[in-house]
Length: 443
Image (cartoon, rainbow, N blue to C red; front, side):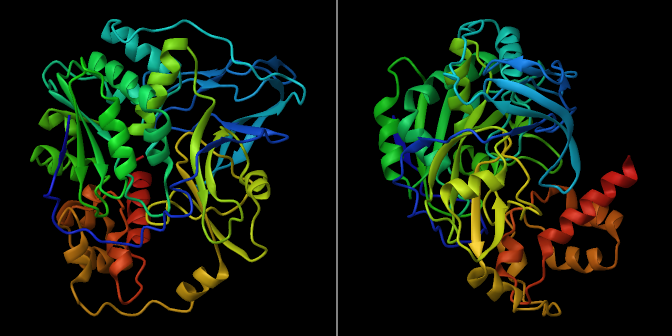
């Protein structure tokens, strides 16, 4: 069953989609790097606790680290090989994090042994435990532990699970290809989600620029599964869960509240597919689909890449322009520009977008100017904040006032304000710094 939703959320922007280079590219398997670097902190919450030692041989899919509490997930070996060392490795945030350095065996078959299967009709607690042990987190970029997100309190029952296949971020086509090539996995994953949450139905939201994915999903809906396929107008940031809930359900998630507070759970479509792919075999996540694209990439495409693959090896394998200037982990609207190519791919990496100086040089040539009070950022903000005022307070270091009086913590850093600013003020970057400062003070 499907429908076309003509309404959309208020405000937002329309950045160039830039998806033509990879939207038609089938998912390809990526080779193993000489050394895979598996960070133990790839998710929001406590880092995983290592259960292997240096010099130990491990099989592909074997447990490398176990969850260290409820707000944590397991880590698995992305390849059969030997643990060279346990040590620190750089992350996209610039910090050094504990990691497992794994050297794959070049002659191994790299088969993955089957673990203990979990059926979609298992009790809720078993499904949640299986998702945690599989190491599954939000693959849309947030990397929030999925089993925690699906843990519905008794006093906040949900009636609907929303599957986020919007993928409004420019350049990225990961979710697009997953819906086309892993359709059965998506619907199998939805069965697990309904079982874990107790919801009675699911809605898959897909933007209208993916008609082939929408048609494939419509055609693949099992007769006994209460799923609706909804096609939405194209607008950024429609993939943000609060925006998607507003569009599909007409419900507004209040400030500082969660989708659970309006009876909904929102899960990325790639996350859903991995649940449907891994749980029936009792396996953990060792790789994920990533869009590698941008003007500086010679062989753009959608690749299934082992977790822990260093960006340097990745870029050398796909071919990079000699004038490589900047690499984003994720899309250019919300993804950070990485400080080094020694950073590894992690579970939350949905895309790698690389640019030459021909693109980034134009931006660098436009220096920041004073705010002219044009109001473009106010008209763009999808949650009706005042980015201009927040920017003024950020420059003055008044972070507490930003939080208490102007709703800083409601900002989900979509970058719409920065995108439209004619004065080239890095608003969202300043909001991130303010939040980090507030977290530091709170700690």
